[in-house]
Length: 105
Image 1 (cartoon, rainbow, N blue to C red):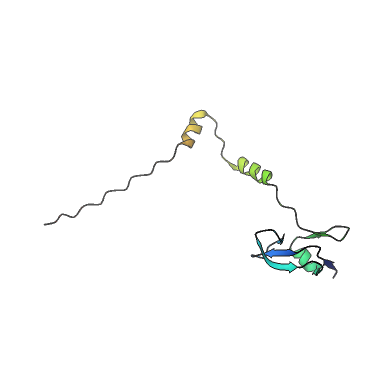
Image 2 (tube, helix red, strand yellow):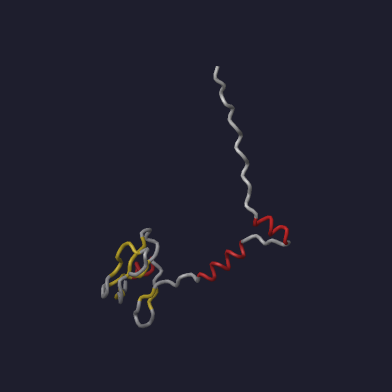
């Protein structure tokens, strides 16, 4: 198996699902320090890719704009103005039933 040299410190998240850089707040475990080898199994496991120059790159992050667009598409569409006004109103809570008060004899 080929080994790749790390050009920067790479960390693994706490749930060990992905690899992140040193400045990322999710960094929990050190995968490789500068100049250390990373084996091909770890590269494949964490979704890293190596360019032609031998530099190890992290998998690209999802664009926040794309995530926002998906959320907008999933939201229910309101057709008329009355439905929009009704949806904007806060829902009223049902009042609690009153407890019977015990009478003192």
